[in-house]
Image 1 (cartoon, rainbow, N blue to C red):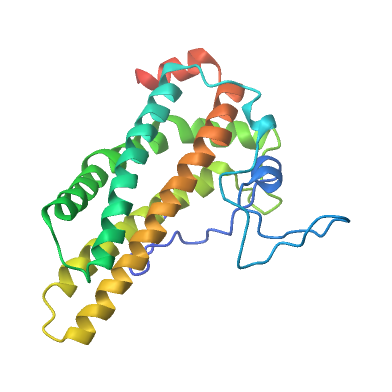
Image 2: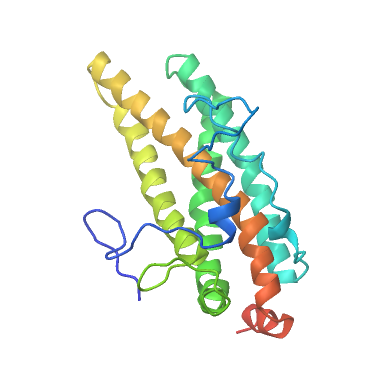
Amino acid sequence: MKIIDTKTGQRVGQEEVTFKKKLKEEDPIKRNVEKETGQAELSPMEPPGAYEANVPEAADAPVRHPLLVQYMREHEKAREILDRFEKAMVEYSELGFKLNDTINDSLREFFTFYEEDLFDHNQREERQLFPLLHKRLIASGEHSESKPPTTAVDMMEDDHVKFIQLSALTFNLLGLAARLPDERSRGFVFHTAFNNARELVELIRLHIYREDHVVFPLAQKLISNEELDAMMHP
């Protein structure tokens, strides 16, 4: 059982997760760029795109089972709403944090979607898929070198906790800023909310990318169709 610190929202005793094989080798975020002869050196201020890396080995088990396909279709809807939310936040910032009907509708749409749909999606993943997938990843060697070993499932679950923290923080800061009488304080809080919203959007996007391109193909490969069927009908 994973225990959450009620003060910080962090998992107690969780170590930083690395993938032994898939995400260690194929993670689209390249944090350490090695110099190669004849290749231009990359600046840390201009990192390669997070979603440009190819992950052919991760796609060796095409996702076909209805449970996994359903998760991926829900991801498609999430991406569409994220795009509208991000666009609204950028416009909100450019207008000096003045609301209009379009911005207000997009913000309401995102926070309603998160509370009613995305949160439920994450809980279903944790309840249906993740427990068995975690065991299979360990059995197949797809885990970290730490004691106890951690897997892609630990990273995905940690992301889910961060979603809760960032979405709550963004929502509450937006509400707080609108009530502050001091202009400088109001501007500071609005900008803090904006930066947290940007971080949340990118975290959800990268999380979806990793699940669609690494985690779900591994689940298709390591878990039988009969076992996946049973997850749909507990």
